[in-house]
Length: 564
Ligand SMILES: Nc1nc2c(ncn2[C@@H]2O[C@H](COP(=O)(O)OP(=O)(O)OP(=O)(O)O)[C@@H](O)[C@H]2O)c(=O)[nH]1
Ligand SMILES: [Mg+2]
Image (cartoon, helix red, strand yellow):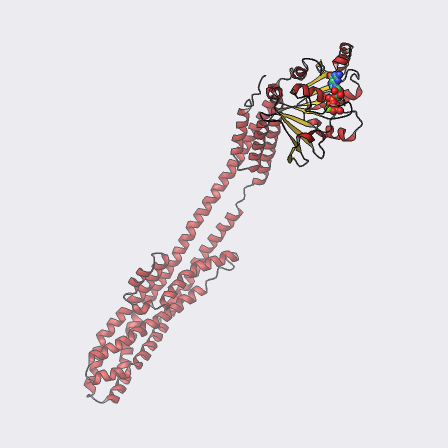
């Protein structure tokens, strides 16, 4: 028995696979999977059909070699489509429900099955194994007037890849049979006719000739065989009837049709992808617009803010610092007076410096924090950018200022000198750290020279006191400190502060400007990245269109090849 070569269309299938791989389409992969399942499950369904009581079930029983496998009777008998499969194990029977679920059937009940769409009989039969490329199917006969039998046959009839029509020569082929033959010839050209019960009909050859002529006349090119279930060669009647069915030819024909369907589905799927693909860079374009606008805004905002920052750090700042220093000194008035009374200039100096140092740094802390705060608070991208982007951008910019402020407020400036080291120890090196460290450094630079100046001029100022008064006049000393020494210190401090404050405010502006520049640079990096994304999206789209057009050509060529 010739076997089907199922690999014959492998090159066509691998072309389809290549095409499917060009797209991440689940639909195409499913099509391929269905096709592969179809091929691996492929069998030639041979439907044994004919009028009721013709002897269909009897012929199949003989072929299979089990006499009571399918019920035979003089009445309309077969009620269920029964597919016959070979097995190496003991025979067993399965009922298939409408929803395709399957149940095992008790062998005793196999002849009276009810409530199933069809039955599957697995039989340990040499002939079934020998003709394993075929699945033989027993069907209910037509013309019995039993509606249920007709319906079962009707709903299954188009499942055949080949047909054997069995008739009783005592009722030669009539119009009903020809109508039936015409219907099945739509589904397959592989049809044979068997006149059975030859043992009972001495005129069998005349009947066969008559039927042969009729078939020819009706344009049906169908071979006709005869046989009897009682003949010795009864098991060979079906093999004879299918001997003209070329299994490879049947497979090729069916598979070509199936491949054409798959190619058609591929073309449809590719068209859908083409229609829904469209190049859309709207999201990227609006991002580009947003970033460009943010860049411009940041730039002009800081230009306009520089001057007001410098102003705020000018004379007004000096006054505020001096006020802080003054009240710090006043609070140490008594201690200073006592030190001087006991002739300890060094102690008096130390007390004053230790009072002035935190006052200076506190005042600076307040002013700086307030300035940075004001500046950052007024940043608003609203109106320049859409709302979510504006919030995000404002957050990005003010973050640096917020961090700087936190460090100032946490008192790093009071540990001036060691502040940067302390920061280095506690902070990872990042952009925030760098900014905060620079800020602390600027303020350190600011305070230290002022303190150094005090250390230089303080002894001279204090020695004024010694020249003016003798010891033990505590109240007088205190008055003198208040009236002469403190104003002198304030005066000297004013000179120094005015000198450094403008310089320091420039440094502060420069630091903030550096911050802004960094933000602009980061915006530019992101812009570059977005533009790159836009280019690659354009390219991808171009490639998709190209591959759609290539694959469409491949598929239509493949269709032509299959149709030829
Ligand atoms: N003498 C003789 N009787 C046969 C032959 N083939 C079948 N019969 C008898 O004819 C009757 C009908 O046979 P079945 O095999 O049930 O016929 P069927 O075509 O399956 O009938 P339905 O299932 O009703 O469509 C039974 O009583 C069989 O024994 C045959 O070749 N010679
Ligand atoms: Mg039957």
